[in-house]
Each structure stands twice: as structure tokens, then as C-alpha cells.
Image (cartoon, rainbow, N blue to C red; front, side, top):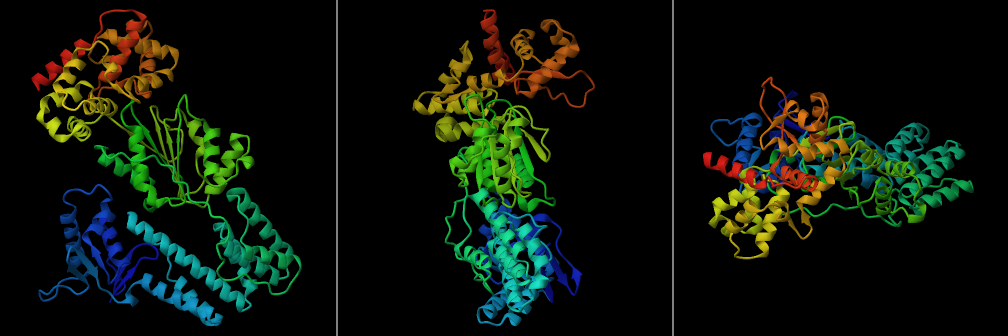
Length: 621
């Protein structure tokens, strides 16, 4: 008979032979079928689990292929008949297996019987049943399976069931007078579960029965201090009664097996900005970021960070927020968000915001950044929290705000990278493709309106280099004047000597984003940025720029590299050639540099020349 194991790494045994599938998505589908053994699992649930909110068009066909592969590997056909076990229903599937073949079902049944025995006053029967149930665990549930929203929720529920069974087994052992053998185990449990009141109360009781009342009182003192410091909460009434009974040396104090939740609860912070409905493209990069940060994907216990880089206006904030919303179900203890920038808060103010969100009264906030950071780390060490930090300027902005929990995660956006932070996965965002920017404009303005002027729409988004913020500004302008032809907008942009004036609408402003990045570079790099448009519209090397910048090629390369790091220049992808590194402007950053050059030395604007060059390239294409 086949055996299916979820309480640890996924494992399928056939007569003690391991036949577990190795393909990640195949394992994920199998795990969901096992979790819902003998229940109907819709194809929609399988698609949502494996691909989330962005399934491919072929998702349902791919699911059918995976089911076919599972049938072949786990339930081979015999005599041409449909194999018993995996059945196809109306838009879904059911894995029909005996309860004794699934460790999850065995655990739940034995844990339930153990809880009933404990409630009915039979601790000997309870401890045997609960010990047997807990021995089925081989590690974290489904620890080697890529889990989506559904499986992540099941894994959390299974872990909560394990802790309840463990607490019940300890209670049964206490009732049987096995307190001396429990002290070491409970000390370890209170270290791994520092805010679990049940384990702390059981440790206090075990120590008291071992004639170690001073240690029992110290356990309460330390636990209460941690609870007050981190959550601004007092222990529950039952634990306080246990403490008072120890102070008066009353005999046989005993907390109830289930501690009623009578204390004030602080809701988990949920500070993420709203996700945008017209987000376009980036599918592979989104998947990469989600996989790196997802607790279910990890084989280590280190904090993981995603650093999102790119030029101003490329959509770093929208990307980070979408990643965070994809991951939100996996970080149920809280999602924190803070934006940096010249007019926004620094690390001290952000930490104050985070701590107030978890219930720390304003009067108890420490004064220094270091003390606030320590308090936040202490609160987060045993929690799953996600921190999103938008538009940071350096590692120094991020370091104090890092949570301490090994299964926490951080997303940070910056024009320049955050490579100094350990555990960082860097994602470089480029402008959209022509098709993606056309799609984005269509969603904003209206598909019929844009399709009617397809060529002019493609020309319009091409003129702004497919930069998402620029496309959004143009789309907002077109949407604000129903019926205004796209060709008119394109003609205005082509002929304007100050095109950045058209790339702003209400609070959307490409120029201000570029200016914010420009202000963060040193003065010599700013001077170089203003002079570079005089080199012409094509790519250039450090050797080309050096005479115009009045410096050596080595110095010129350092200045150009600094501008690349702040998203104001880019390195031309010339393939594997062995020639010198060549740099180029994005058309929008070039326009901004020309504006600055014109302020220093008024001269005919270069934008129309760039427009002619773009049009010539499109005609040749």
C-alpha cells in the first residue's frame, strides 16, 4: 500500500520504496491533493496554488499533464482500467486513499483522541496517544515543497496543531507527576517559543514541584518583562494567578490547559499601499522575487532581502508593492511599509511608526535609533513579518529596520543598489518593451481608443523610451480629455522644446523623479551629467567623454559609473565584445540633462534632433 507523508519533507513510499516525484510543481499539486485527501480539489484551486494570480494561458492543460504524470508514476494502469486512487471529476480531481496511509490524517485523529482523553481525566491514555501523534513529525510540514497561498495556510494550521498536541502531552505528563523529566524540555520550548504562555506556565509549575520556586518566579518575571516590552501587554489572568500562588507558596497550583484570551489583542499591521490594477509585464522578475522571499522556498534560516533597482520612473515602487501583495498571506504577523526621500521620514521616525503599529505606547518609545531597532528586532524574532522600504538612498537607511526573525523578509527599492546587506537578491528593472508599454497605455486610456490609432500610440510610447511613469503621465493626459486624438499628443511631444512639461499630470511628474536622483550624486558627477549631451545622441565611451569633462579617461569612467549607479545613465549592452565600455542616455534622462545644460549655457535644444533620430530608426525598422 502507498504511504503519503506530509509532516516533514514530502514523501511517497510504495513497499518502503521512495517514489516521490522530483519536479517542483508536480510535488506541489500532489501535496495539495494529499492535504485534501478524499475531497474534491477543483482545477481552479490547483491553478491558484501553483501559479497564484498570474497563471499562464495553458495552466489548466498543464494541470491535466501533471495529473497524467502522477497517475503514471503513482497509480500505474492495470489491464487498461483507470487506476484506483486518483479520480477525475467535474473540473477537478480527488485523491482517494485510506486514512492510515496519510501521516497528516493519522496525526489529527490521534491528537484529537489524546485531547479527549485529557479532558476526560485519563492522562496516561492522553500522553500515549499524543506522543504517538507527535512522533509522526519529521520536520516542518511540507518543508521541501514550493507552497502557494493554499498550502502555506495548511502548513501554518498543521504547525499550530503540533504545538497544541505538544502542550497537551506536557500537561498529561504533569498530571502523571513526571515534572522532573519535563524541566529541560520545557526550557527548550520556552526558548523556541518565547511568547507562548502555556509552555511558560507549565515550566513554572514543573520547577515549583521540583522545589525550585525561585527559578519558577524568575521564569514569570522574564516572560512578563518580554511581553510588556515587546507587546505592551500583561500576562493572562490564569498565568497571573499561577504567579500569585507561587508567591504565597500554595500547593499544587495548576493553570488551565487552555489559557483564555482575555488580554487586549493587537491586530497584525497591514500597511501595504494598494496594488495597481494596470500593472504590466515583469512576470519572470516577479516570480524570481517571490521565490526568493517566500518562507516556504527556503532551506536556510537567514533573513532574505530583495533590492529593486532601476532608473527613476521605471516602476520600482509598483513592482515592490506587487511582490509584497503576492507574499502577504505568508507573512501573517504583519506587513510594514515606509517611504524614504527628502521630504519623508528617516530610520528613527520609521521605527517609531512600526513600534506604534504593534501596540507600543508613544510614551514608551526609546529616544535613540539603536534602542528602537533593538525593540523592533526583539518583537519580530519569532514572527513572520514583511518589511517594504521604498526609495531608500543607502544601506544605512535599511539596516536599523531589518526584522530579526529568520523567516522574515524585506523588499527595498533604490536607484543605486544595496549590495552591502547580506542575503540580498538584486533585481534590475528596465523600461517596458514596446508591446508592454502599448498595453499599459491601452488599459489606462481605453483599448478601443488606442487601437484606433495604433501607429501613433506606438510612436508616442516610443518617444518616451517606454518608461512606465512617462507612459502613465501621457495616458492620464489623454484620459482627462476624451476624444483628443493620440496623434495630436504625439505631435506635441515631437515638437516640444521642453517635453518633460508634458510628462507631468497632477502628482505624476517625471522631472521631479529625475531631479530627486540627480540631487543624490556628488557635484562632479552632476557637472558631468550636464555636459554629456554635447557629445551627441549616440553611445560614448569614457575616452570620448574625457576631453569634454576635462579629466583623464580613468576619472571620466568613475564619474560615468556613478551616474549609472544612480539611474541617470546606462551601459550599452554591446554583447561579449572586447572593446571599451560604452554608455548611453535613456531618452528621458537625456532630455533632463539637456534642460540642465540649457540653464548653464542657453542654446538650441537638442530634443527635436533626438525625435528625428527615433523616427528614422522606426522608418528603417
